[in-house]
Length: 396
Image 1: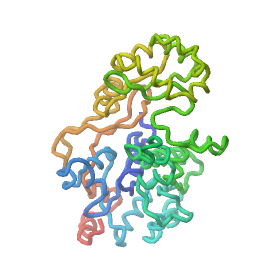
Image 2: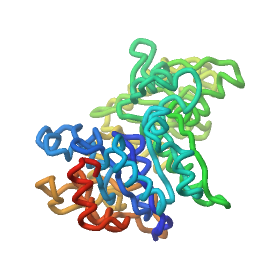
Image 3: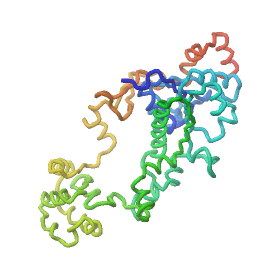
Image 4: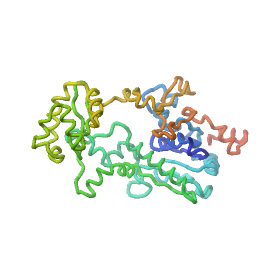
């Protein structure tokens, strides 16, 4: 099922937040045309752990979220390039960009100008701090946004905070927020809207419990490491071979855990009788439990505790979880055989949704820079001579 089949999206974005947004839309069936800068294209083409792919402008960071898209290189600083974009907009449903606020207007192809070409256009602008306000001119990268949004201040523990989350969480949440907003705006009648997606606001919106503890209860968030501030025992514990997460958040789960570990005595200990008692004495409770947990492997405990209705799970590495049937058998990963410009078979992630039992997928691998130039320009009505002229001028 391709719920966005027939929708054309113009992806003018770079690096992660915008490309990740359009990655979701492509897997849901949209025809995504990636409009890139001539010569270098999306900066992500030069980023990733493989220097050879970076040099070939097919960096791992680019491959990760650009499968299924078509690419054309257009110089928006030239009138010929802007004309190509205007023609693209005439037949598009969505345009997504993540330039600094005001850049598209200065080029003469901002929302108001393009709206005149296509009043039904859904124009999505992703930025670090929003399209208005005191920080519109500031550059925004994931780590900057994590710090500004308060994420780093509550990540780690009292000794290690502030820490950045170990993946670009602000870019990713910003991209998901944009994809959600685009999908919703496509349903509006009449269609046509300007979507202002701030990465800081997107991240804050995802921190509902943390933010509300301050707004409603007046409790300032603090870094608590791997502990769950709402309950105990709920956090990460030391097992014989690896860390083990246990979330005994209900009283019944706490009682089942204590009994399974042979520590029924803890149930009558005045330090641990109620949830609030256990929260106040979580360090002592953790020490008591780890005396038993440290005697056996984490995955053995996880299997047994889950069987008793006590949520538990070993801490996996990324390679471990990708190879596990939990992921490997669900269709999240898609393979491409020797895609152009890469020189090897690659496996990439799709999108984290199943529709009628199937994971949406795309047929085409990530594109080389400008790979679909002639086909796209021909669709726009350019004849071969006009295409040659655009190339000579460097406009497309």
